[in-house]
Image 1: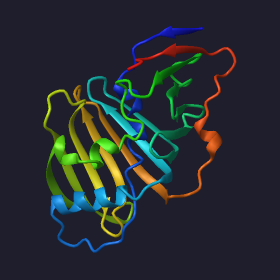
Image 2: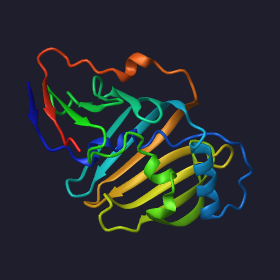
Image 3: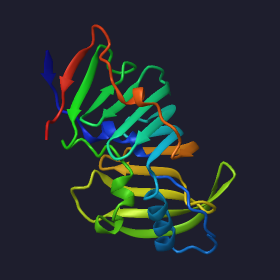
Image 4: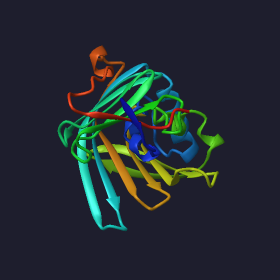
Length: 228
């Protein structure tokens, strides 16, 4: 038996990011914002599978809280991904190609939220909205240099063109050496800042097919999110 529940886009921000990374070596001195974004877009287009380790920090100025997490994402484009959290342990987000399953026992024990792909719950490939035809939805600026964990990067700022966007602002940091997306920061409409940093990236790496299958744990209720 399933129950109905509203599922917000924020639940799916993580596969944030993962998917936007890749790898076409290119020189990157004195980049323009448009040039940096174009390198990232071209590199992203070469991704078929990915295996990514990440850290995530969410800052909420309204509550004065900061929440940190870390884990691994496996992806097979276009519609399968699996996020397994090491911290908090046991939390998972899985897309099996038909449904997205959100199981977060650290904050919502005893329940899993299931939403049909195509519903207004965020794309399973989160990076697509930033790196597939980004100028259709965003204006581009930025271009400043930064070093992240010893890696030289340039940032790109994306400002939504539509007031209906879930974001006020998106910042991407792209590796100078290989066009890998090293960090993504989003500011949502309520001012919550989410920062995801890639610590290890395997482009077109082998992935575990079983990771894209979600088995509902015994005693856990399934709540249906939007169906499209």
